[in-house]
Length: 250
Image (tube, rainbow, N blue to C red):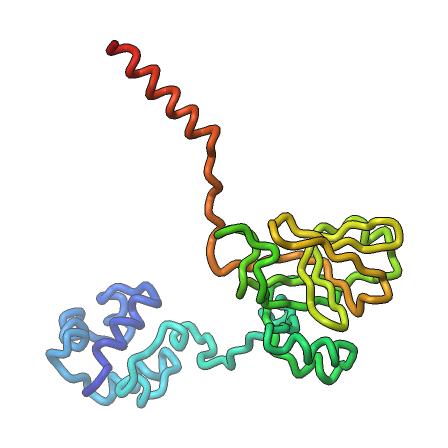
């Protein structure tokens, strides 16, 4: 099967040539060119050579391949794809799963271990050290709202020696020798208070020396959208409106 007819029609369209203008370039009649394009007639070898040379196309390409617009416009094809530009926009953040929490506690300070952790990629451009944590408890959840198990939080490292930074941190991931704790943080004298508004959980009081690492939570990724809370005030307002409507008929 020859692609000659299809290719010369594409060449004309790309070069914005009418059939008449194209035919005159090669001493052809417009009807003859039309027959070539519609594959009702085969061109002479002399005509093929003229067209190939004029547009700097090989005879093989003209006859046996469907020409691309890039090729006709002399753009390079098959450029090696590189996603390095996008890689530069992404931060690789080591991620700690519930199954690796205790291993992280033992090895949090070892660079080789940190480099071996799975990473999440996020479009965050910053030199701050970060960690991602997949949550395993419901301490910060409220029914179907709040931070649920299997949600992920991303934190930035906080310097424990900088009390000013710590005192203004609302939500943190605290690494201790026993566990990882996601709570709201406040300072009470020399003690750090970790609290949650959920019933059944008591505040946790820690000394600074009991904390291995402290991460301020900057991003939260949820597996499901938070559900709107019941609006009692709105319901009462609607009920009052319905009662007023009924009064009109009494």
